Length: 164
Image 1 (cartoon, rainbow, N blue to C red):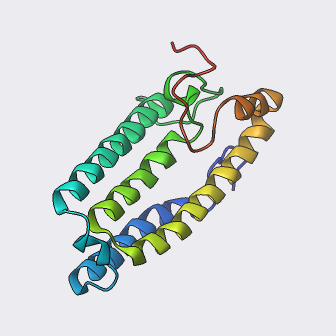
Image 2: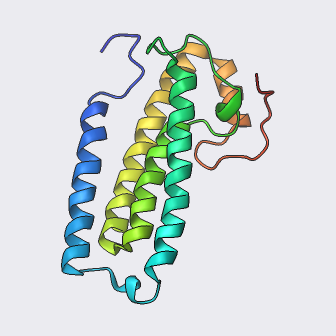
């Protein structure tokens, strides 16, 4: 790993592995009705509506953060981005990915999928911690101050930083 690598090793593998295994697990759970008992109590239209809202938020976080981070260059930024979505939450792209998983869980009501999601969340938290340690090394006190001001996972409605 070079000093410029900010991602945890094998991250790309896990970005493929988790969605594939999660989709397979939830699909099998729904097909065989292993742990989807909540479907009896929650109408499908409610699950689809709420899941759709989560999916919309997920794609917003992913698209906006990707555009801000990489733009047309596809290279990581050389400074801390504190404005726009990054002034509300430190890991908007990972949050968006996690919201996709949550949307599927809401739509399917898969309890087995929920248990698997807990493991996925813990792994994404580990990836975020790894990357944040790298950013602390790169940017020092400025990044530590940013960490104090901006939450890691739950977005704030107001940002301590002005938007550009």
